[in-house]
Every structure is written in C-alpha cells, then in structure tokens.
Length: 281
Picture 1 (cartoon, rainbow, N blue to C red):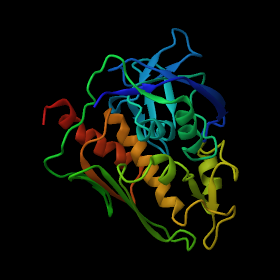
Picture 2: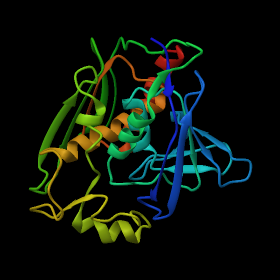
Picture 3: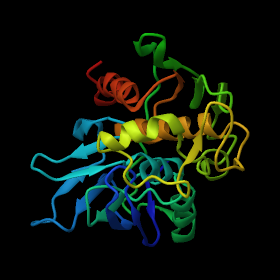
C-alpha cells in the first residue's frame, strides 16, 4: 500500500477549547514520508511542530505538542484523528495560534473537509508503514488502563464509567475495515460534567467551551440534547484515543483497548509502542 495525502487543501476557523483564542487552520498536501505536522505561521520563522509522540509537551485535558523552541500547539487530537482515520499519512497543517479550533466539539467538520478535499496516493509511492504487534503492551493507573494486544486486524475498544446517570457505564468497539471513521466515530462530541465547569475555568481551562461545542450533563440528564449516538461520550473517548495513537505516525496491527483512560495514559501507551515502530524492541 502507498502512503496517502490530500488532493487539495481546506481551511477552518474557530476558538480553542482551553485558550478561547480564535485561530485559523489551513491543511495542505505533503510529500510522502513527511508525515503530519503543524506550522505556526504566526511566529517568526514559521516553526514546524511534528505530530509525533516525541513532541508531546503536556496532556492536561487535551494533547499539546511543542517544537524544540517555544512553539506549541494544543488540542491536536480531533484534527489528527480525522486525518489518520481518513487515511491521510502526510499533511501540512498551518495554524496562526496556540490551539486547534474546537469547532462543534467533534471531528466531523474536519472529516467532511478531508473528504471534500480528497485523499490520493503520494506520487513518490513510498509504502505505507505498519507493524504487527507480537506481544501485549499496557499502562495503567488505578483501575484505568490502555493496552495494545496482538490481533489479526486493527481494532479500538473503549469503556467509561461515570457516576452521572446520563452517562453511566458505556463500551464501544470500532474496526476501521468495517466502519468508516467519518460515520462511526467522527461525529461524537466532547463532553463534560456541569459541576466541574467552574473549577476547570478557575484553573484556566475550557475558556472556549460552551453548549454549542460540547455536551454537558448534570448528575441525571444532558443539558443540551439530543445526542448523536446513544453512547456518544464513549465514542468521543475513542476518537481521542485514535488522535493520540496517530502520534506514532501510523497504527499498529493490534487491538487497542482502553478503560477509564485519559490523554495522559493514551500518550504513555503510544510512547511504549514507539520502540516497536523504530525496530528497537
């Protein structure tokens, strides 16, 4: 299989979830072997930030990447999930601010823009890299965990458990070969608990969050229904996992299984898988 890039470019604008800062993003084709990477066009020298796990700088309620200098870009997971889930191996992402726009809180707008731009083989024809996982790899914290298990094909499974009756215990499993990312995962929106909002805002987070770009529930019900799926929260957690795991550069042939996890655990597993990609394991 060849690597793939975009046939054309596309643009989106919006506010960042945590910063509340408006940013403009332009996504363009990239050459085979370049991978997915960000360019901070608002900074001197337009520094490049690779969408690689080695560039992760922090994982507090989102994933942030940084270059060797001061350039950073936050909340990259939804856009990267859309690119990787749509089969785009190589893409140049130009952004004029510190955080990727949240848009509607899902990856749907990104996935639709990718589909409209088109996905094509890279002309150079470099083979699409992958690896077959031969032994289990896992990380855990308390009863939360993320694991990669040997499997005949790529599959993602996720479980969550919340005290809120609106969410409760949910599980979802997704196999890219059987369902399109754009249909099964991309529409799922980020979500939050109403009683945590003031605390998070006081900590300088979710400044750009609203009922227009996030699902919010109290202990009993959703404040802004309807949901796009009956289990939309767990599908969104799976979306985040796809975006974080994409920082390997490509997905392993494995079953990726997570329960009550976080960006921090997602990234820890991705780091654990890195030696298998580089061939040092």
